[in-house]
Length: 481
Ligand code: BG6
Image (cartoon, rainbow, N blue to C red; front, side):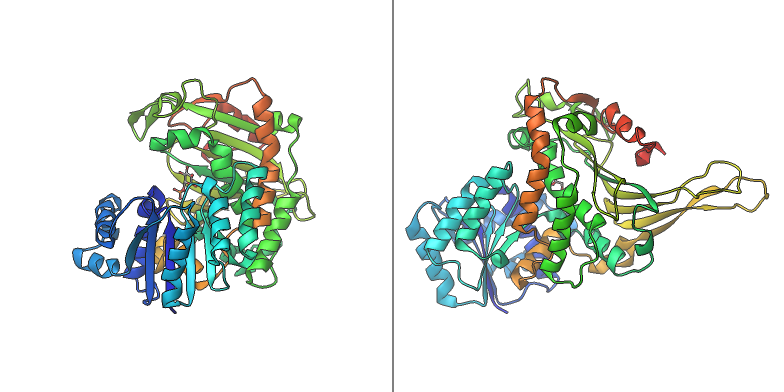
């Protein structure tokens, strides 16, 4: 299959930091269809050669095992091209169309790796230039809007030029192997399904923790915050995969219909429930990995009086027969103890126990990163004495080890899927809008609230109020067990 892949924003961070390294890995693994061209477009004047050199230099920032040798890069670079383009000029789209039509590849994937405020104008121009035929796919990178209205505005512009089946909205978490494994765990194994419901499950906790701070992105982050940056997209997508009903086929819309139903079943926030069920925090100076780090307000490009949240913990429920009454806790933050993403399914305790000592409930831990695996926590008798209490043990499954050579990174997987036209791991516009609809009352309540976010020390698990949030239901976060 032949393809043309065009990156709008071809000199931007996303392109050189994530997309080019991912494409190179796909190329190295022999997964990239061989008959392809990659075209980067941006405002500055460059030749193909100088663009190739620019990308080559940027590879020093990639971890060493993923860097190309000179010979590998030379072969990869044969696919790389560069054109200057002013995204507001219709003539420039005609030139691009000429470049694509001339060769007539089987597919043209247009990746909008630009600032999102350009999405509407680029989509309109693409439509006007006729760069929206059935062979064309458009890939959109987050942030897809800032709130419901701006997300709808982007979606209207996308729809004015493209069919929904041509729109590939990226949530890079969906490309992570561990996240795909969630589907395998739930729908490729019958074992857990009878237990996957309110009768057996006490609560579910999704944690997306980072040790890093906002780094050089202070200006972007300060107008975004943790709720928009991580909860509205990544955490909610994970929640839908945990809570959805089994789809009837692996068809993208069969899956996305079920995910949408979950989003629609989430308990809506009210002014009062935001105060009760949502905790927001902001980091202060502390130590992460033994090293001193500044507080959020001291970070580069962050206003000194900022009220932006760098931490969110919240409690919600999925209002349907399967999940009624089961708390779902979502938590994310920057400058927490370490990078740690996991989903914990806390089962109910045994209804009656004949053993002395605590009646510890079973737990299934779905580890997303840094490791990718499953832990099933059980109770066992050590065997020395009948009257002894049970000891906690766990089964540990390490997918990185089991499938080491076949693991594919998130962007690599998503780029290959976009080229192949597989929509399963991309977000549909109605899912995305429903997620905004759900978080918006929280944003509104915070905008009216005089209280600043709660301070937490960098290198901890966030404000104490996050522990109180789960303790109210008699639960505890995994690190508190
Ligand atoms: C991005 C956020 O979507 O996800 C970043 O904008 C965050 O703030 C990143 O750091 C986390 O992704 P990952 O793959 O490192 O967990």
